[in-house]
Image (cartoon, rainbow, N blue to C red; front, side, top):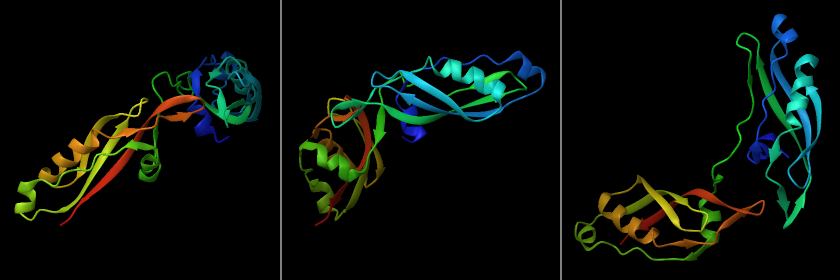
Length: 198
């Protein structure tokens, strides 16, 4: 599994200490480990793939204590293999690790994916004052859909203010089927385009 995807499932991080011997010799740089994560999200294997052996040794010990959200494929928990990258900065003694995701997971999806999840649609009404002024065009909105499938926030990207108000009124009533990733509902970000034309 690509590292960026698996790090999105990272729940707990134990940062490694900086080895004193490595600090004295100004040894730093990136360490890449190949990891295997079991069905419960526990790291069962961590093998150095790149980096100084002194740094890799403490990286392996720390990474074996990390915890991931179990990965689910076709409703079944499965083991996954990935990589993890840590950066050791000799000048400061700092070790940079991926960040754990404790808050709600939010994915960005295409308008097509979001449309496929829609279960309640409300057509926007063409505002009479916009029609009388011959105002037409597209309204583009940035929308966040919460874990229950409701439109949690709506921001305007483009559109005439008269048309935007009508679009927001309609979209705020839309309802979506919750999007489930690895067995858990997640928040979604998407864009919605509504065309107002005579």
